[in-house]
Length: 319
Image (cartoon, rainbow, N blue to C red; front, side, top):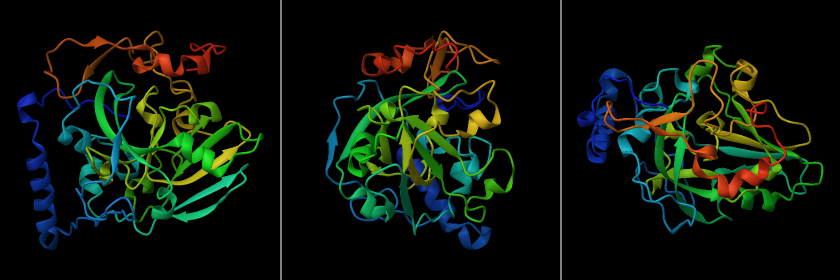
């Protein structure tokens, strides 16, 4: 989930990209004294290994919004990634020692092609696209993020799911040594999510491997995460190690933890309130904290592309 910064942080305190990089370098320089080491980049093949490296051969997507992106600093330092802590700043602080290499992705279930693949081998067959997407959290905050990723529909097509595959399930790495937040039972680990096969093959869904034209930073789910822009942020599972084609609806972590608040579908719907707050309006992260909220758009503004997926579904009951 993507949520806003505390109200005591002013827009003037938003740091630039250069300042953010310099701060990360300061953390790295202080490793000997403080026991903190900056992780080497997770990437290989079409995704460079060094942090902040530019990604090559990126094409633009026709699905991108023309809205101004949220600042690099906000996108990379204010996240939910409970594997590294429950505070929004925790991922930026506690992923500096995270080393995603080696990284393997297992594809299994009802598909003609399955197996376990090194990250670079998994990525190689696909084209990189930049998709500037609106992203909406549950708590009435939103961002605009220039993701770089590969089409999930193309991934699904490559592995050839059989007619038994009704859903696609995703699973995060489970390794409490590397992901210290998993030592706390705040969720049932590993983190799990799922989509219907129709959702997974919609052209909007991607597996992101970068943002702002650069390799995906650790706090944002390196080396690979799910991005589904018409759904609330908790559907965007990070650090994916398993993709499974399954017949029955897969368990999803927040639906397991609090089923009365978080449903399987998680479509952005301003007409359905969360039990503890309204979803009707939102404020963009980085805006003036006194600025008026704007109306939340149905399906986060992507109704033209996805509304047909739910034409026979009661979205008040199937939240």
